Image (cartoon, rainbow, N blue to C red; front, side):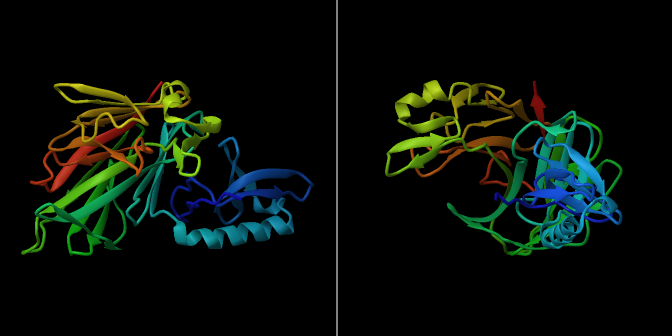
Length: 321
């Protein structure tokens, strides 16, 4: 059974971007429900159906086996719980004390618009000439700090640098975030910080077959057939001077830098990325060991990595019909 991370946090809004595993829940009167465990509260349990809808079930309605199942799911989920969650009619997100610090789902009628949450990761490195030395998260400093319109997370990196990640709170249809670095300890080399978003992977290369596989085809495909099969899977990036438009699978343009991007999938709403403030930009980076490879990563970062800035953004992520 496929397992995910369960988002549970007593005392805050209970949110499900992913759940533990699909389970059968039985009531005392003989009814059954296939769903994912989300959270347990004093007198009820929240479950997410396969269709994405969330229901609240009184504990008094569950049979003994399902009550025990809820207890076990709650205990196993505690270690992977978010430290802050937020939901409005258009989106819901959860914040975590780790590099993959934010997971967001856009909603329509309470249902997610994409099959998986969108995950943002924070990267931090020391830059020595052309060599980058990635820094690890050491610890989170204190609890999330919430103001009227945003929430702040503070992390200490392994080199002692303090990172601040800010996410907007409200009823808007867009997710807005930014980041800042406190002044670095004296003597450190230049620092680089960025937030990254991986374009959904749709390709997998089979070395034995020398062909590509994926959910879009029941049989392996040669590269020459990808344009036909993957029509509509595109990445669009714009700057003030030019734009780049290309398919996921072809390394036409790497390191394109711009202020706007769109991730297009024929079966999902368009994911729109935008820089709403200065000084920073977005950059596309092709990833994977094969050519063509899996797809792109979008970096939200300073305009010039050789002269990094202490802050980036704000940036916004939204969906388009």
